[in-house]
Amino acid sequence: METASIGATSKGGLCRLTLTDLDAKVRAWFVAQCEAVGCTVTLDDMGNIFARRPGRDPALPPIAIGSHLDTQPTGGKFDGVIGVLAGLEVLRVLEESGTRTEAAIEVIDWTNEEGSRFAPAMLSSGVFAGAFTRQWAYDRTDRSGVRFEAALDAIGYRGEQACGAHPLSAHFELHIEQGPILEAEDAVIGIVTGVQGMRWYEVTLDGREGHAGATPMRLRQDALLGASRMVVAIAAIAARHAPDAVGTVGLIESRPNSRNVVPGQVFFTVDLRHPDDSVLETMEREMHEAFDAAKGDLSLSVERVWNNQAVSFDPACIDAVRVSAGRLGLASREIVSGAGHDSAYVARVAPTGMIFVPCAGGLSHNEAESAERDHVAAGAAVLLSAVLEMDRRLSAG
Ligand code: GLV
Ligand code: MN
Ligand code: MN
Image 1 (cartoon, helix red, strand yellow):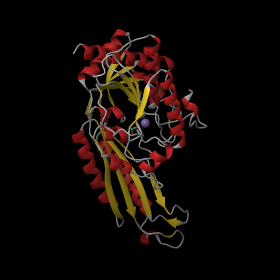
Image 2 (tube, rainbow, N blue to C red):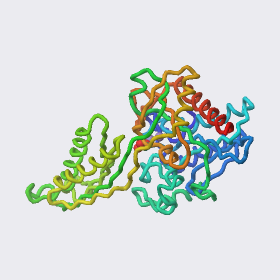
Image 3 (cartoon, rainbow, N blue to C red):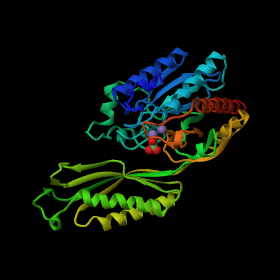
Image 4 (cartoon, protein in one colour):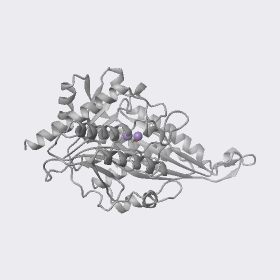
Protein backbone atom coordinates (compact mmCIF):
# COMPACT_ATOMS: atom_id res chain seq x y z
CA MET A 1 0.00 0.00 0.00
CA GLU A 2 2.98 2.28 0.53
CA THR A 3 4.25 1.79 -3.02
CA ALA A 4 0.65 2.13 -4.29
CA SER A 5 0.80 5.82 -3.34
CA ILE A 6 3.47 6.28 -6.05
CA GLY A 7 1.43 6.82 -9.20
CA ALA A 8 -1.98 6.38 -7.53
CA THR A 9 -5.01 7.08 -9.74
CA SER A 10 -8.32 8.53 -8.58
CA LYS A 11 -10.04 5.17 -9.15
CA GLY A 12 -7.74 3.32 -6.77
CA GLY A 13 -5.30 1.97 -9.33
CA LEU A 14 -1.84 2.91 -10.53
CA CYS A 15 -0.34 4.67 -13.50
CA ARG A 16 3.40 4.08 -13.13
CA LEU A 17 4.73 3.65 -16.63
CA THR A 18 8.23 2.32 -17.08
CA LEU A 19 11.17 4.75 -16.99
CA THR A 20 9.09 7.73 -15.85
CA ASP A 21 9.77 9.87 -12.77
CA LEU A 22 7.24 7.75 -10.87
CA ASP A 23 9.15 4.61 -11.83
CA ALA A 24 12.32 6.32 -10.55
CA LYS A 25 10.55 7.09 -7.28
CA VAL A 26 9.41 3.52 -6.63
CA ARG A 27 12.85 2.21 -7.65
CA ALA A 28 14.51 4.52 -5.10
CA TRP A 29 12.07 3.29 -2.44
CA PHE A 30 12.83 -0.34 -3.32
CA VAL A 31 16.61 0.16 -3.31
CA ALA A 32 16.46 1.90 0.10
CA GLN A 33 14.37 -0.95 1.59
CA CYS A 34 16.79 -3.58 0.26
CA GLU A 35 19.81 -1.69 1.56
CA ALA A 36 18.10 -1.42 4.95
CA VAL A 37 18.14 -5.24 5.16
CA GLY A 38 21.84 -5.24 4.35
CA CYS A 39 21.64 -6.13 0.66
CA THR A 40 24.09 -5.02 -1.99
CA VAL A 41 22.21 -3.40 -4.87
CA THR A 42 23.54 -3.42 -8.43
CA LEU A 43 22.13 -2.35 -11.80
CA ASP A 44 22.67 -3.65 -15.30
CA ASP A 45 22.68 -1.56 -18.46
CA MET A 46 18.95 -2.20 -19.08
CA GLY A 47 18.11 -0.74 -15.68
CA ASN A 48 17.30 -4.11 -14.09
CA ILE A 49 17.88 -3.88 -10.32
CA PHE A 50 19.49 -6.76 -8.36
CA ALA A 51 19.40 -6.73 -4.54
CA ARG A 52 21.64 -9.48 -3.17
CA ARG A 53 21.79 -11.14 0.23
CA PRO A 54 24.98 -13.22 0.23
CA GLY A 55 25.01 -16.98 0.79
CA ARG A 56 27.64 -19.26 2.33
CA ASP A 57 29.00 -20.40 -1.02
CA PRO A 58 30.10 -17.47 -3.21
CA ALA A 59 30.70 -19.89 -6.09
CA LEU A 60 26.96 -20.62 -6.41
CA PRO A 61 25.00 -18.19 -8.61
CA PRO A 62 22.13 -16.58 -6.71
CA ILE A 63 18.59 -17.91 -6.47
CA ALA A 64 16.53 -15.01 -7.78
CA ILE A 65 13.05 -13.72 -7.03
CA GLY A 66 11.96 -11.30 -9.73
CA SER A 67 9.02 -9.36 -11.11
CA HIS A 68 8.23 -5.75 -12.05
CA LEU A 69 7.29 -2.42 -10.49
CA ASP A 70 6.01 -0.74 -13.67
CA THR A 71 2.28 -0.73 -14.42
CA GLN A 72 -0.22 -0.25 -17.21
CA PRO A 73 -1.66 3.29 -17.67
CA THR A 74 -4.80 2.13 -15.83
CA GLY A 75 -3.14 -0.66 -13.87
CA GLY A 76 -3.74 -2.10 -10.44
CA LYS A 77 -1.70 -2.25 -7.25
CA PHE A 78 -0.77 -5.93 -7.54
CA ASP A 79 0.31 -6.86 -11.10
CA GLY A 80 4.07 -7.28 -10.79
CA VAL A 81 4.36 -5.32 -7.58
CA ILE A 82 3.57 -8.23 -5.26
CA GLY A 83 6.30 -10.31 -6.90
CA VAL A 84 8.96 -7.74 -6.06
CA LEU A 85 7.60 -6.89 -2.62
CA ALA A 86 7.23 -10.57 -1.68
CA GLY A 87 10.91 -10.87 -2.59
CA LEU A 88 11.70 -8.01 -0.23
CA GLU A 89 9.65 -9.75 2.47
CA VAL A 90 11.64 -12.95 1.90
CA LEU A 91 14.86 -10.96 2.41
CA ARG A 92 13.49 -9.49 5.63
CA VAL A 93 12.36 -12.87 6.98
CA LEU A 94 15.74 -14.43 6.21
CA GLU A 95 17.48 -11.54 7.93
CA GLU A 96 15.21 -11.43 11.00
CA SER A 97 15.40 -15.19 11.49
CA GLY A 98 19.18 -15.24 10.97
CA THR A 99 18.78 -17.85 8.22
CA ARG A 100 21.91 -18.58 6.19
CA THR A 101 21.43 -19.93 2.69
CA GLU A 102 24.05 -21.72 0.60
CA ALA A 103 23.40 -19.61 -2.51
CA ALA A 104 22.91 -15.86 -2.37
CA ILE A 105 19.27 -14.77 -2.60
CA GLU A 106 18.61 -11.95 -5.01
CA VAL A 107 15.48 -9.87 -5.61
CA ILE A 108 15.13 -8.41 -9.10
CA ASP A 109 13.03 -5.55 -10.47
CA TRP A 110 12.89 -6.14 -14.23
CA THR A 111 12.61 -2.98 -16.37
CA ASN A 112 9.58 -2.53 -18.66
CA GLU A 113 7.64 -5.72 -18.15
CA GLU A 114 4.37 -4.15 -19.25
CA GLY A 115 5.36 -3.05 -22.74
CA SER A 116 2.63 -0.43 -22.76
CA ARG A 117 5.09 2.46 -23.10
CA PHE A 118 7.83 0.65 -25.03
CA ALA A 119 6.74 -2.44 -26.99
CA PRO A 120 7.32 -5.31 -26.65
CA ALA A 121 6.57 -6.44 -23.11
CA MET A 122 9.27 -8.07 -20.96
CA LEU A 123 11.87 -6.13 -22.89
CA SER A 124 14.69 -6.20 -20.34
CA SER A 125 14.28 -9.79 -19.19
CA GLY A 126 14.24 -10.49 -22.94
CA VAL A 127 17.65 -8.83 -23.36
CA PHE A 128 18.85 -10.67 -20.23
CA ALA A 129 17.87 -13.99 -21.85
CA GLY A 130 19.31 -13.12 -25.28
CA ALA A 131 15.92 -12.83 -27.03
CA PHE A 132 16.74 -9.23 -28.10
CA THR A 133 20.01 -7.34 -28.42
CA ARG A 134 20.60 -4.45 -26.08
CA GLN A 135 20.90 -2.04 -29.00
CA TRP A 136 17.55 -3.13 -30.45
CA ALA A 137 15.97 -2.56 -27.05
CA TYR A 138 17.63 0.86 -26.71
CA ASP A 139 16.14 1.87 -30.07
CA ARG A 140 12.50 1.13 -29.13
CA THR A 141 10.46 4.32 -29.02
CA ASP A 142 7.30 5.26 -27.16
CA ARG A 143 4.32 6.78 -28.99
CA SER A 144 5.85 10.24 -28.67
CA GLY A 145 9.16 9.17 -30.18
CA VAL A 146 11.27 8.99 -26.99
CA ARG A 147 13.91 6.24 -27.22
CA PHE A 148 14.17 3.63 -24.46
CA GLU A 149 17.85 4.46 -23.95
CA ALA A 150 17.11 8.18 -23.48
CA ALA A 151 14.33 7.40 -21.01
CA LEU A 152 16.63 5.05 -19.07
CA ASP A 153 19.33 7.74 -18.85
CA ALA A 154 16.76 10.39 -17.90
CA ILE A 155 15.85 8.51 -14.71
CA GLY A 156 19.50 7.61 -13.98
CA TYR A 157 19.11 3.85 -13.84
CA ARG A 158 21.59 2.66 -16.48
CA GLY A 159 24.10 0.43 -14.67
CA GLU A 160 27.58 -0.72 -15.61
CA GLN A 161 26.98 -4.45 -15.78
CA ALA A 162 26.18 -5.86 -19.24
CA CYS A 163 22.61 -7.15 -19.20
CA GLY A 164 22.69 -10.96 -19.20
CA ALA A 165 26.20 -11.30 -17.73
CA HIS A 166 24.65 -12.35 -14.46
CA PRO A 167 24.19 -16.09 -13.96
CA LEU A 168 21.29 -17.32 -11.83
CA SER A 169 20.84 -20.73 -10.17
CA ALA A 170 17.05 -20.37 -10.41
CA HIS A 171 14.33 -17.73 -10.77
CA PHE A 172 10.97 -17.65 -8.97
CA GLU A 173 8.13 -15.18 -9.46
CA LEU A 174 4.98 -14.67 -7.43
CA HIS A 175 2.15 -12.99 -9.35
CA ILE A 176 -1.61 -12.59 -9.24
CA GLU A 177 -3.30 -14.95 -11.68
CA GLN A 178 -4.92 -12.08 -13.65
CA GLY A 179 -7.75 -14.47 -14.57
CA PRO A 180 -10.70 -16.20 -12.86
CA ILE A 181 -9.64 -19.85 -12.46
CA LEU A 182 -8.15 -20.01 -8.94
CA GLU A 183 -10.96 -17.97 -7.45
CA ALA A 184 -13.63 -20.12 -9.12
CA GLU A 185 -12.05 -23.28 -7.71
CA ASP A 186 -11.26 -21.93 -4.24
CA ALA A 187 -7.58 -22.62 -4.83
CA VAL A 188 -5.11 -20.33 -3.09
CA ILE A 189 -1.98 -21.30 -5.01
CA GLY A 190 -1.50 -21.74 -8.74
CA ILE A 191 1.46 -23.98 -9.56
CA VAL A 192 2.36 -22.40 -12.88
CA THR A 193 3.60 -24.93 -15.42
CA GLY A 194 4.22 -22.49 -18.29
CA VAL A 195 3.13 -19.44 -20.25
CA GLN A 196 1.04 -19.38 -23.41
CA GLY A 197 2.41 -18.12 -26.73
CA MET A 198 1.76 -14.51 -27.70
CA ARG A 199 2.30 -12.36 -30.76
CA TRP A 200 2.00 -8.60 -31.21
CA TYR A 201 1.41 -6.73 -34.48
CA GLU A 202 1.34 -3.08 -35.53
CA VAL A 203 -1.07 -2.22 -38.32
CA THR A 204 -1.23 0.97 -40.37
CA LEU A 205 -4.06 1.68 -42.80
CA ASP A 206 -3.82 4.57 -45.21
CA GLY A 207 -6.86 6.04 -46.90
CA ARG A 208 -7.66 9.63 -47.85
CA GLU A 209 -8.79 12.52 -45.70
CA GLY A 210 -11.88 14.30 -46.96
CA HIS A 211 -14.67 16.64 -45.93
CA ALA A 212 -17.27 14.90 -43.73
CA GLY A 213 -20.08 16.92 -45.30
CA ALA A 214 -19.09 17.18 -48.91
CA THR A 215 -17.47 13.78 -49.67
CA PRO A 216 -20.11 11.29 -50.90
CA MET A 217 -19.95 7.91 -49.15
CA ARG A 218 -19.04 6.08 -52.38
CA LEU A 219 -15.96 8.27 -52.90
CA ARG A 220 -14.47 7.82 -49.45
CA GLN A 221 -11.33 5.98 -48.42
CA ASP A 222 -12.12 5.87 -44.71
CA ALA A 223 -9.25 4.25 -42.82
CA LEU A 224 -11.21 3.98 -39.57
CA LEU A 225 -14.05 2.15 -41.26
CA GLY A 226 -11.52 -0.36 -42.62
CA ALA A 227 -9.93 -0.69 -39.18
CA SER A 228 -13.38 -1.36 -37.68
CA ARG A 229 -13.85 -4.35 -39.99
CA MET A 230 -10.45 -5.63 -38.86
CA VAL A 231 -11.23 -5.24 -35.16
CA VAL A 232 -14.32 -7.40 -35.67
CA ALA A 233 -12.26 -9.93 -37.66
CA ILE A 234 -9.80 -10.34 -34.75
CA ALA A 235 -12.66 -11.21 -32.38
CA ALA A 236 -14.02 -13.70 -34.93
CA ILE A 237 -10.63 -15.42 -35.28
CA ALA A 238 -10.32 -15.78 -31.51
CA ALA A 239 -13.87 -17.17 -31.35
CA ARG A 240 -13.05 -19.72 -34.05
CA HIS A 241 -10.26 -21.12 -31.87
CA ALA A 242 -12.22 -21.04 -28.60
CA PRO A 243 -11.92 -21.65 -25.74
CA ASP A 244 -8.16 -21.10 -25.47
CA ALA A 245 -7.56 -18.38 -28.08
CA VAL A 246 -7.71 -14.67 -27.30
CA GLY A 247 -7.30 -11.68 -29.59
CA THR A 248 -7.26 -7.99 -28.67
CA VAL A 249 -7.02 -4.65 -30.43
CA GLY A 250 -6.02 -2.49 -27.47
CA LEU A 251 -4.51 0.65 -28.98
CA ILE A 252 -5.94 2.63 -31.87
CA GLU A 253 -4.98 6.04 -33.24
CA SER A 254 -7.07 7.69 -35.93
CA ARG A 255 -5.71 10.67 -37.87
CA PRO A 256 -6.40 13.51 -38.01
CA ASN A 257 -8.99 12.67 -35.30
CA SER A 258 -11.26 15.54 -36.17
CA ARG A 259 -15.04 15.11 -36.07
CA ASN A 260 -15.67 16.51 -39.54
CA VAL A 261 -12.78 14.88 -41.41
CA VAL A 262 -13.01 11.42 -42.99
CA PRO A 263 -10.18 9.52 -41.20
CA GLY A 264 -7.18 9.30 -43.50
CA GLN A 265 -4.89 7.07 -41.48
CA VAL A 266 -5.31 4.59 -38.64
CA PHE A 267 -2.68 2.86 -36.54
CA PHE A 268 -3.70 -0.03 -34.31
CA THR A 269 -2.15 -2.93 -32.42
CA VAL A 270 -3.13 -6.60 -32.30
CA ASP A 271 -2.36 -9.04 -29.47
CA LEU A 272 -2.99 -12.74 -30.30
CA ARG A 273 -2.44 -15.53 -27.73
CA HIS A 274 -2.82 -19.30 -27.52
CA PRO A 275 -1.09 -22.01 -25.46
CA ASP A 276 -0.20 -23.91 -28.66
CA ASP A 277 2.22 -22.14 -31.04
CA SER A 278 0.87 -24.04 -34.06
CA VAL A 279 -2.65 -22.68 -33.43
CA LEU A 280 -1.15 -19.23 -33.06
CA GLU A 281 0.47 -19.70 -36.45
CA THR A 282 -2.96 -20.51 -37.94
CA MET A 283 -4.50 -17.48 -36.23
CA GLU A 284 -1.80 -15.28 -37.74
CA ARG A 285 -2.52 -16.63 -41.23
CA GLU A 286 -6.24 -16.10 -40.76
CA MET A 287 -5.59 -12.54 -39.61
CA HIS A 288 -3.64 -11.75 -42.81
CA GLU A 289 -6.41 -13.27 -44.95
CA ALA A 290 -9.13 -11.37 -43.08
CA PHE A 291 -7.24 -8.08 -43.27
CA ASP A 292 -6.64 -8.48 -47.02
CA ALA A 293 -10.36 -9.12 -47.48
CA ALA A 294 -11.31 -6.15 -45.28
CA LYS A 295 -8.96 -3.48 -46.60
CA GLY A 296 -10.90 -2.55 -49.76
CA ASP A 297 -9.03 0.31 -51.45
CA LEU A 298 -7.01 1.23 -48.38
CA SER A 299 -3.30 0.53 -48.27
CA LEU A 300 -2.33 -1.84 -45.51
CA SER A 301 0.88 -2.53 -43.62
CA VAL A 302 1.09 -5.23 -40.95
CA GLU A 303 4.27 -5.71 -38.95
CA ARG A 304 4.78 -8.48 -36.43
CA VAL A 305 6.71 -6.77 -33.62
CA TRP A 306 6.82 -9.63 -31.13
CA ASN A 307 6.63 -13.42 -31.20
CA ASN A 308 6.93 -14.91 -27.74
CA GLN A 309 6.62 -18.67 -27.98
CA ALA A 310 4.85 -20.82 -25.41
CA VAL A 311 7.10 -21.69 -22.46
CA SER A 312 7.27 -24.72 -20.16
CA PHE A 313 8.82 -24.06 -16.77
CA ASP A 314 11.55 -26.16 -15.16
CA PRO A 315 10.27 -29.41 -13.59
CA ALA A 316 12.42 -28.98 -10.45
CA CYS A 317 11.10 -25.44 -9.89
CA ILE A 318 7.51 -26.54 -10.49
CA ASP A 319 8.09 -29.33 -8.00
CA ALA A 320 9.57 -26.95 -5.40
CA VAL A 321 6.38 -24.87 -5.66
CA ARG A 322 4.12 -27.94 -5.45
CA VAL A 323 5.98 -29.39 -2.45
CA SER A 324 5.88 -26.01 -0.69
CA ALA A 325 2.14 -25.52 -1.21
CA GLY A 326 1.59 -29.06 0.10
CA ARG A 327 3.74 -28.54 3.20
CA LEU A 328 1.86 -25.35 4.00
CA GLY A 329 -1.47 -27.15 3.56
CA LEU A 330 -2.68 -24.75 0.86
CA ALA A 331 -5.27 -25.68 -1.77
CA SER A 332 -3.51 -25.57 -5.12
CA ARG A 333 -3.84 -26.52 -8.77
CA GLU A 334 -1.62 -26.47 -11.83
CA ILE A 335 -2.22 -23.61 -14.25
CA VAL A 336 -0.83 -22.19 -17.51
CA SER A 337 -0.32 -18.43 -17.50
CA GLY A 338 -2.42 -16.41 -19.92
CA ALA A 339 -0.34 -13.32 -19.23
CA GLY A 340 3.26 -12.73 -20.17
CA HIS A 341 5.87 -12.58 -17.42
CA ASP A 342 9.59 -11.89 -17.11
CA SER A 343 9.89 -15.52 -16.02
CA ALA A 344 8.95 -16.56 -19.55
CA TYR A 345 12.25 -15.12 -20.83
CA VAL A 346 14.37 -15.91 -17.79
CA ALA A 347 13.32 -19.58 -18.24
CA ARG A 348 15.62 -19.63 -21.30
CA VAL A 349 18.72 -19.08 -19.17
CA ALA A 350 17.89 -20.36 -15.68
CA PRO A 351 15.58 -22.97 -14.12
CA THR A 352 12.39 -20.99 -13.50
CA GLY A 353 9.03 -21.39 -11.79
CA MET A 354 6.05 -19.21 -10.88
CA ILE A 355 3.41 -19.06 -8.17
CA PHE A 356 -0.03 -17.54 -8.75
CA VAL A 357 -2.49 -16.27 -6.17
CA PRO A 358 -6.14 -15.37 -6.92
CA CYS A 359 -7.31 -11.85 -7.72
CA ALA A 360 -10.86 -10.64 -7.19
CA GLY A 361 -13.14 -11.48 -10.08
CA GLY A 362 -10.09 -12.40 -12.15
CA LEU A 363 -9.68 -8.67 -12.90
CA SER A 364 -6.28 -7.33 -13.91
CA HIS A 365 -4.97 -4.52 -16.13
CA ASN A 366 -7.77 -2.67 -14.39
CA GLU A 367 -7.66 -0.09 -11.60
CA ALA A 368 -10.07 -2.21 -9.55
CA GLU A 369 -7.54 -5.09 -9.45
CA SER A 370 -7.48 -6.54 -5.95
CA ALA A 371 -6.09 -9.51 -4.03
CA GLU A 372 -6.74 -10.75 -0.51
CA ARG A 373 -4.07 -10.13 2.07
CA ASP A 374 -4.17 -13.78 3.23
CA HIS A 375 -3.74 -15.02 -0.33
CA VAL A 376 -0.78 -12.73 -0.96
CA ALA A 377 0.74 -13.85 2.36
CA ALA A 378 0.21 -17.51 1.39
CA GLY A 379 1.89 -16.87 -1.96
CA ALA A 380 4.83 -15.20 -0.24
CA ALA A 381 5.13 -18.15 2.16
CA VAL A 382 5.22 -20.58 -0.78
CA LEU A 383 7.81 -18.36 -2.46
CA LEU A 384 10.07 -18.42 0.62
CA SER A 385 9.64 -22.17 0.99
CA ALA A 386 10.33 -22.85 -2.72
CA VAL A 387 13.49 -20.73 -2.59
CA LEU A 388 14.75 -22.58 0.52
CA GLU A 389 13.82 -25.93 -1.07
CA MET A 390 15.87 -25.00 -4.14
CA ASP A 391 18.75 -23.89 -1.95
CA ARG A 392 18.75 -27.26 -0.16
CA ARG A 393 18.71 -29.10 -3.47
CA LEU A 394 21.58 -26.96 -4.79
CA SER A 395 23.74 -27.55 -1.73
CA ALA A 396 22.99 -31.28 -1.88
CA GLY A 397 24.54 -31.10 -5.34
C1 GLV B 1 1.80 -8.50 -19.69
O1 GLV B 1 1.28 -7.76 -18.86
C2 GLV B 1 1.00 -9.14 -20.70
O2 GLV B 1 0.58 -8.43 -21.64
O3 GLV B 1 0.69 -10.33 -20.56
MN1 MN C 1 2.80 -8.55 -14.47
MN1 MN D 1 0.68 -6.54 -16.63
